[in-house]
Image: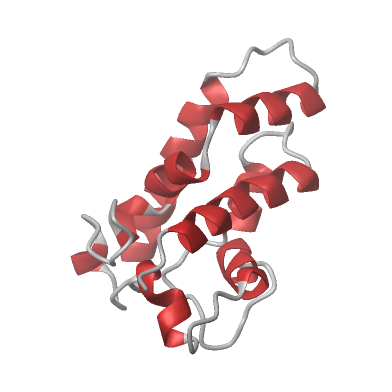
Length: 143
């Protein structure tokens, strides 16, 4: 039930972003236009905030309804001996290449969600969106 709620929220948010792009733009122009207007902070708050919270500490409005408590994403580096592994975080968010022990089954597969959100999204655009979120998470790590 909680996974379905997260997926529904994600689908509605993706539809809202897609609706802001002019329908006459080419696929590449569409993907680039969306990416140029969206920061990692905004992407995080739009797609991740409902579960992980606006401050990324795991206290989003849907957190209580999930089977697993969302992770405090401000402590990724601290949990990893002070190292922020951007590649691992990217693969965790993408979700299409599952990493054992990372991202519970409640977490949406954002790589697929971003890819399917509109025919205009290329693999390059999906990677750029996820990388923007990774860069944002890296910037908010606690010392």
